[in-house]
Length: 208
Image (tube, rainbow, N blue to C red; front, side):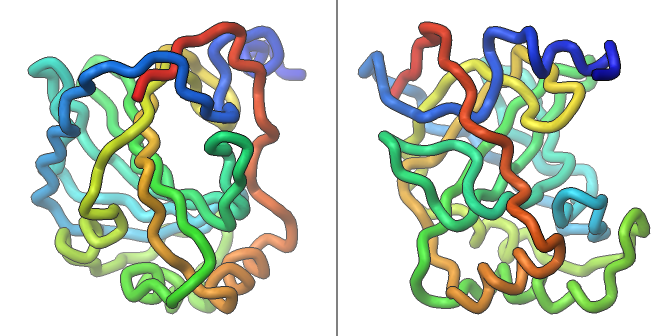
């Protein structure tokens, strides 16, 4: 393995995990201040990623974590109390000095999702590694999160190399829906599951 990626094997705070809450605390509501539209979309070879224009932030303890992009995994990477989901979306935020925070949303099979449909419609136009301009309003982006934003919180990592740790994870408890056709359409983009296997929690605290 490339030595730059050694954390993937040696790290003690790797993601994804099977989320089993270990501490019931009064978590602050997520301070999501999303104001910017999407600007581009790319198939980067392991997921479909939507890049977002400057202007949307997740505020944590007074610090701005800027929304950079969101992307998808089929099936879900994290499990919740042993349950897997057919799709998981990751909203990736970063501070100006490189600290990272992720908000994750689970999708269960059910009704088709209109915001996902707008993204999925671009699949035939995507070439691996080539970003295309993509128009998606901030309201359509917000619709990819449930109204109820109760969440689980833990420290973890990026789920792709270099698997950097000290990432603040916030996994929303309430799933949205995705149709079977939408699940299959995403899977057919790659022909393989693009989720990382569950990692050891190594005694980490999972707050709810």
